[in-house]
Length: 239
Image 1 (cartoon, rainbow, N blue to C red):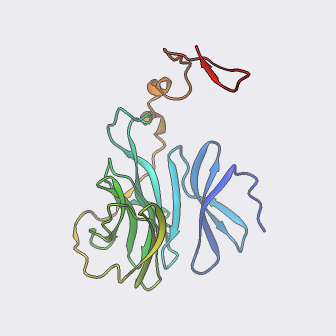
Image 2 (tube, rainbow, N blue to C red; image 1 turned 45 degrees about the vertical axis):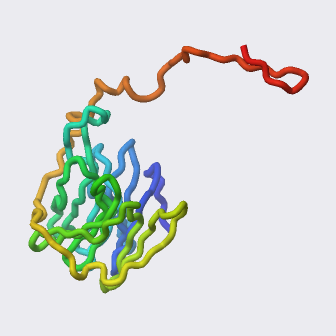
Image 3 (cartoon, rainbow, N blue to C red; image 1 turned 90 degrees about the horizontal axis):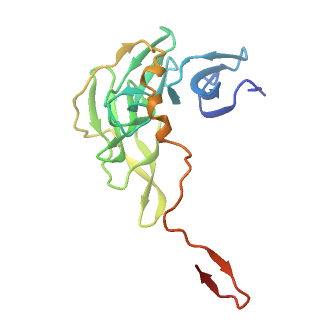
């Protein structure tokens, strides 16, 4: 049993394949970061440390890397308070203690990474709905795994890559589906190999503080107000 009294909340967790470590998303000091809990030595190591949102850690099959989603890619979008940020896929090399960026799609959010051998599978907002793509880290080629207009949610893949399960909203309800051999006969295209990057703590540069007053609670009075009161004969009277 472990105590996480230093954290305000613990979100997604993932246990290493050897069962010795847990990667998790922890919220502390008004920010969410990636941490590693060593079960043997009862030690917590912080992996990321900045105001950007980091979440959804997943161990690689050899337990030498941790993939995760991070909202730190900058693009121009005046409608957003944060000056235009989107989620992309990154991974942390445990031995090297270095970060690598896997996707860089700017206006498209990529999230929920999972590993299969030397590839990362992830959800992507392709054409305004969530589907799953895969990137081969060795050559940087990318392929679509699913292409559903209703969207694919909460996917996971078997350790041998033969089966993939996911949730789909269809005909007024949510159901679980299974896709066999999801990584076969894919059409790969050139994309980009992972690039080593430095996580900079430049959140204040992209936080549009001048637009903050346009969001949140504001006093507002409706133009055409209608008063309603209850009469003894159970009828409404409008004035």
